[in-house]
Image (cartoon, rainbow, N blue to C red):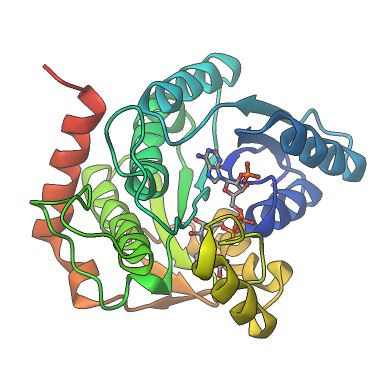
Length: 279
Ligand SMILES: NC(=O)c1ccc[n+]([C@@H]2O[C@H](COP(=O)([O-])OP(=O)(O)OC[C@H]3O[C@@H](n4cnc5c(N)ncnc54)[C@H](OP(=O)(O)O)[C@@H]3O)[C@@H](O)[C@H]2O)c1
């Protein structure tokens, strides 16, 4: 990874932070995207203590479209090339919340941010080809189906269902992006990290955070959970692989709903409309 520039979201804790540290140790210069100054500076300090590279950080809230776009523009202005983009920031919320763009918070943070940030960095990625995009998805997509008439979950809200659907979006986005950008020299893959003991779910509220905390007693470590992320970002084994879903550093088969190319196309169109904003 010497000489490579890696942009990563959600690296203030959990699997994102472990991945950032390991990739930096391999020689990559890391560009972090974080929302909280205190956690961001702490993560950057930990990262800098391990290597002498000029790692950097950009701040913004990835649940807001204007911020996703500003972050992409800011990173594109600062970095001449981007060899790897890792879309990893994500969360689960115990109750339905709406962003200032009138979007359901899980959908905005876990799916739309991947879409807007990636498209905003398109020029830099193309100029750096061969380049890679890695999207953190989840096995939680299993059993979930997208409702295109209600992407914002206005009809009913179940945290696990809405979270699972956002992770289904990650896989569909990976497939469609890979198809659209085929021949560009940019590969796009996604992954399930396993059930990992991170800060995930801690702030989700009420019974859900209690349940997640309890379940984490049997979860794997962030070091283990980050392995597939690191593998997809750096291994020569997957240099020519694109559009796949990985688990434990091996290609895996996601559900039929996650392999639905018509749904992937439709999701792209709906996401592009949201990105463009009201006419
Ligand atoms: N843990 C698991 O078992 C598991 C399983 C499958 C998939 N995943 C996925 O793995 C990814 C990483 O999660 P993790 O387990 O490492 O959890 P984590 O420790 O909670 O890390 C989540 C990261 O996302 C950032 N983030 C959340 N909302 C954000 C926003 N609006 N703007 C900017 N950054 C934001 C957090 O920043 P702050 O520090 O500011 O909170 C943090 O850096 C997520 O996509 C998650 O869905 C996790």
